[in-house]
Length: 230
Ligand code: NI
Ligand code: MN
View 1 (cartoon, rainbow, N blue to C red):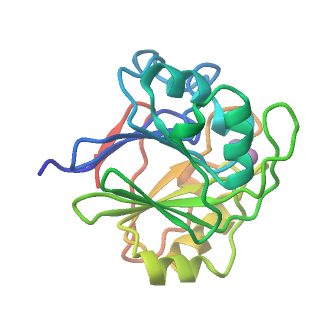
View 2: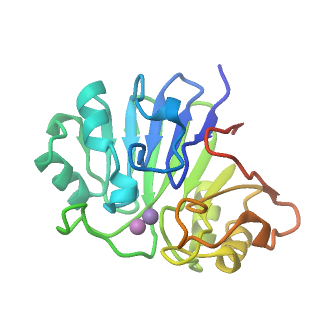
View 3: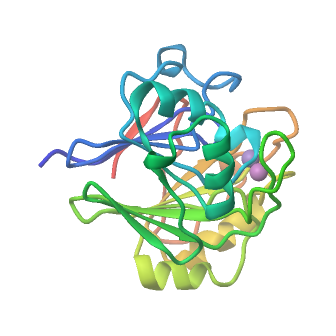
């Protein structure tokens, strides 16, 4: 079995290539994302797209990618409904709510809590924002916090899903900044953390060097286009 790898596409967008050969896009905001590498703007395939919430910098190119590649799209029920009305094949939509796990071709995707606001790109209601836990065929677990502030029940996410890697927003203003993200790392009890939602726009002032990294945690600071093995 191949390794599961995680590639940062800038902002909160990631490509996850799983041990079983599935290509999963998380919040694929590619076109319009000033940090998305040029060679990542047009995915060559996309088996699964998973979304944390309806804001435009997370829904991004979802509709176009799903139409082109016939991707299965996992999103919270109201957001999934919006996607179905806006061009995603309803037969390819999975519409869980928080706490629900979708099994998609050997990859498990669970919606977990997040504290943020939510609407679809056209301003309509898109349900509550969520985080995502993706569990791959090799048993690896990756937690994408989505847009959120820190919250105490991140402890539960650590306890239940044991993420090998946590992907946390640190940019401040629209999400938690470094001070809260440092506590999030501790609450999750995770060993490896990838910072995201930073450096995209001038408003996002939080940077990885401002993090107070707990003992035993490896900070996996990436450049857009960079990849780590999970
Ligand atoms: Ni947001
Ligand atoms: Mn955002």
